[in-house]
Amino acid sequence: GWGAYDAVVYAGMGEPTLRLDTLLSSCEAIRKLLPPQVPIRLNTNGLGSEHAGRDISLPLRRSGVSHVSVALNTADPAQYHALMASPYGERGLEIAADFALRCAAEGLVVEVTAVERPGV
Image (cartoon, rainbow, N blue to C red; front, side):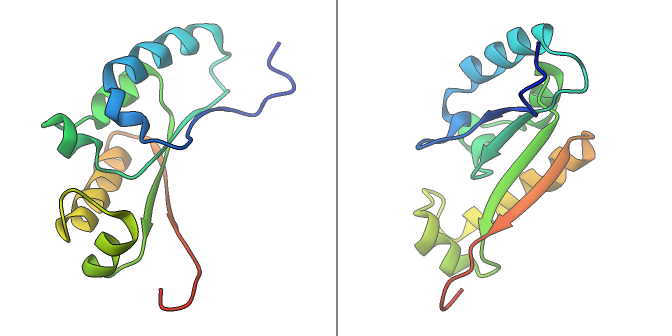
């Protein structure tokens, strides 16, 4: 059983949404094995929709993702670009924030994270 586990989490040393097809298909397969109350969470930089060229919030929800954690890390666009090395420049912050809003509109539980450090 899943008694020892609280959730399935996609996270790590890379952006999970860069391999969107793999992410979606694995979520679908895992969701079929889990009790419905066990969340599937995606930790992301929030740039996946821009990378995919389409809004990915609905496909994420349909695949079984229930929670999304978006790393914004700052409220300043220039600082965001400096911290995150966004390929979208200063637009990256707006793109990531919009992704968080779209996920919330799809009914996903959304968490936005930031870092505490000098100058941020």
